Picture 1 (cartoon, helix red, strand yellow):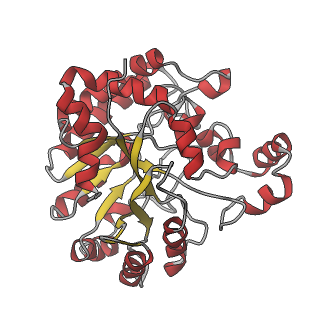
Picture 2 (cartoon, rainbow, N blue to C red; picture 1 turned 90 degrees about the vertical axis):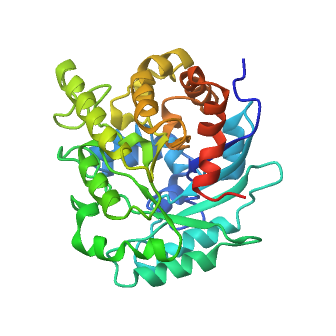
Length: 360
């Protein structure tokens, strides 16, 4: 039974093309793209274990992921619009990051593919030309309604376990005094903020959000509690007791964040290997029932603290593709939200994202 008999909005996907855009693996892909097994061996031999463990598999991360690829992944579900969230564009200095926004604006969205509803770009508030970068992003994505550029993501994910992939160069990014000084520029330009930090950093996300109640903020991936479902890194999630402690701390800290009425949350990224999933190792993706069994405690708590008016389903594709198909993730999430009623389903799968990102 399809619990979503209407087009949904997916407010968190990634697009990339290592053959034609700046990409960390561009040279490798051009040299070995025709030999995926050899390319996988090369990546595993040259990259830190933390990166491999975070990805699980390498094939989906090294292949182009474009509008037609996403449409194929949605299968029986119809997606009206998507939001592209920055994919760690390889040119990461100053105005170079705006190239991603320009590139996205030219991709073949619409028609048989979902339309591009909004762009969340990369911008570093610590950069001396941060305001110039914001202006350039806004100008790089023209639309009939002004601009598709709706906000930025500045990743702060940094774990104390040295063998967990660190997506930020140093800890405590969101409480850096210089970031706090410049963050108000987002309000000046009417922009939103996508925060991504690990669950251990939730108090810092809360501190940032408390300082800027005028800036809409969404926590990506329910703050990614590393090791919740199994061992990760050097010492994280190694025992059942440790995993229970991870859940307990996450539950308390995300409730504190949810107490701020301008903060939203994405039910997304919950099948990334960094949470401790092992589906990619068994060579079989998670079933709908397995997803429901695993994720219900997280989703139920998110509903309890955010309410269904501040939650958005998002796919995080192709990053979660390693563990499950997109239709199964949608179906499982819909089953978990369904007890809240039809209005809640439409809010979580469509209306909240449309409102938060100003999708027209």
